[in-house]
Length: 40
Image 1 (cartoon, rainbow, N blue to C red):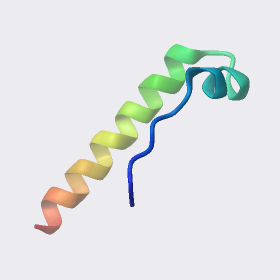
Image 2: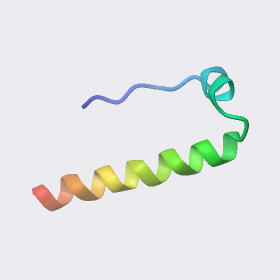
Image 3: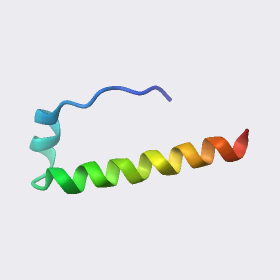
């Protein structure tokens, strides 16, 4: 799973609440990191 930058314009097209989208992505990123560290 690679990381790719996300365009702010693309995010604005998909959601009305940019702040909420960033919060959700942040929580998911933390979850992925925690899962990876538990496997190691």
